[in-house]
Length: 421
Ligand SMILES: Cc1cc2nc3c(=O)[nH]c(=O)nc-3n(C[C@H](O)[C@H](O)[C@H](O)COP(=O)(O)OP(=O)(O)OC[C@H]3O[C@@H](n4cnc5c(N)ncnc54)[C@H](O)[C@@H]3O)c2cc1C
Image 1: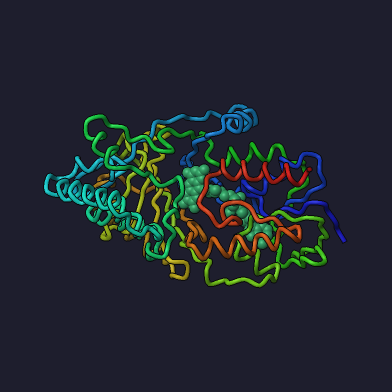
Image 2: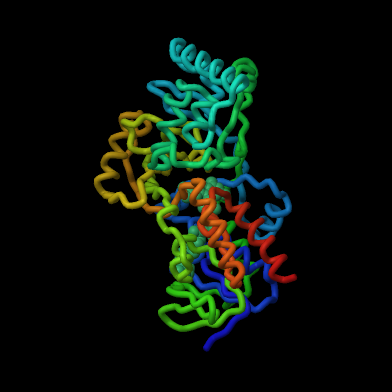
């Protein structure tokens, strides 16, 4: 039987960053797919460069960015000041919506500032319960901001009742703003957020993955080899091709699937998620300029967000990604939805005289996990049981969390420090 000290499941950012950080340790990476990258893959078609949904990067740890860039010789990485807007009726409001309510028609602005003021007053006099994401939105922003943007937009994205999500379900990715920030922004615009500028390699997000993979020992990644079961007592993983004995296992597989494979007792019902259908669309002519992201809260419009690659690359043919959220068990009719998306793009005046010349689609399933009190508690409990048996679950889906690729690298490196100790 093949045996290895550290068995790594998944050759996405988390699995590869683990392998890279293990250095000369004895490890093997098993990947179910035919290529590396996980959700950070790039598709190139008819001169267009697309990711599996727009992936843009904002590194907080400069040493990680430098480490990656050193491994990308010849690759130009663009640094772009973000320009993002909310499509609101026939207006484009600067994002984040809550900081730019003064750009709304006057009556709607008055509704927003009135409700915001009294929500703020109520919070200061007798703080309301803020246990769910929905309650947090109402309590911090008031009814009008919540109902005009924050609730419809996030319901389209998460495809669930926001009352079931934890108040911090989006963590640092939620652009918080208080009354003072919002009023100050009316005269001194400061729409900076966690990603006010971002980087993007000209070869697409996969270039960062390739940079990590360049630090992985040649021959240590087995593609098209999914792990199908794990005997945690005997420390043996099974694939369709072989059995592999391990001393410890690091998994970036979605946590609910890992728990199933390990046959560890768990409450599967607390792990829910959305899936995201992404259309990458290439056109023959340029479209709107100076926009990178456009958020669509309207329930009339099929998609919740679109992104413009051509405005990142400064190219002369419109290149879009379009994202639609679905509940995890909902059927997805890609052909019917492509027709609807193109009609919605025309109605929104994104597509006017352009002709579609290339397209690609992918369903990310899971895409955004539903972070609830129950999922956090059950994840912590089961992950700790597995850890005691030498099975470590990491990454966006292994951690059942909301994070960036930089977070994945930081987490993988920290785990390796303890594994190597
Ligand atoms: C819509 C969307 C937009 C995003 N945008 C950004 C962004 O702009 N910037 C950013 O930094 N991050 C972004 N992210 C997050 C980023 O995609 C993730 O943090 C990162 O790709 C997660 O990497 P991972 O290795 O943890 O998981 P994954 O990429 O999911 O990798 C897991 C790997 O495990 C493999 N696998 C699954 N089951 C098995 C098995 N049984 N055996 C072996 N292998 C298996 C899979 O094939 C996959 O390759 C976005 C995510 C989504 C969904």
